[in-house]
Length: 246
Image (tube, rainbow, N blue to C red; front, side, top):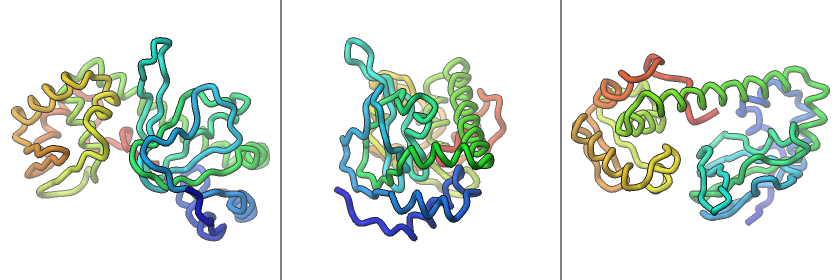
């Protein structure tokens, strides 16, 4: 469902997105004038791997799954992104072809903007180009860290690390975490089969003393997970490399 977009509000919002924070007001006004803001239901496919797209997307609220499909129809989950994340923008480096598919996994409000405007501005604005490179480098570091975790951490430790990414890592005292999407999708994001995820989550509970009630997880403090999961990681806690928001 598309609803009327206020260009002034879109322009203000774009200034909160890291790659656009240094852009000129004239560019932000131009691209905002061509923005579309849509409410999408869970299951909506935004684009498919190898599609040629004309617009890129910013998640204002909700969650979007990036994935590829194997020849036999199985899905490989590349990432699951939440608010403030940009997706599809890297298509400007690939003749507007996207390297993955994107599906809404919880009701989401998403802004779409013309790729042509972005591509033209990159040629004129060195800072925008640099911001995009920084964003890509940050994503690369995060992926490298996940490869490290799959090599070194056991399954319960990786789940603990995932939970730490969902919250403010500096908060003190009791913590309540609500899984933002179903456990099957969490398992896929972590490269586990659902049954492996269930066993590993139970072991994490037994090893750390956290409480699990459906999709809600409670603990007296973050230390319960930090001591267990972060011991098998090369980064110090709190770990900015694994932040899920831009």
